[in-house]
View 1 (cartoon, rainbow, N blue to C red):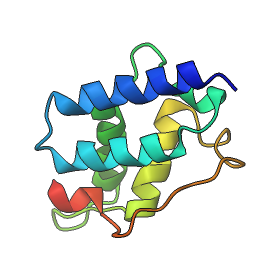
View 2: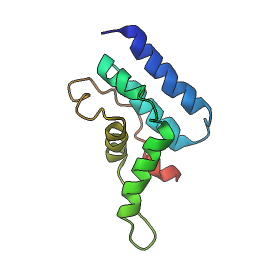
View 3: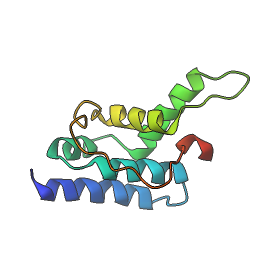
Length: 112
């Protein structure tokens, strides 16, 4: 495992998040992705050209929109994180990687 590529990927998404640190949904997605970035395969996925935290949030919002009833649609926090992982193409790659849970669960869609 190349620690330098993992550090580069974490720095990349952290830098992107810092462009808008008041967007709590983006912060939550960045924190989750940072916590699972423990392998080179995940790091490479996070560095994929054209993939962004805002794009991951958009993918989550799209699922919520498709479920919309009476003007309201949502996904759970865990499901939102799984959608973000899938957006980056890391859903199957992280299956064997340890996932570090934060003390408090955050539903990224609460901030929309």
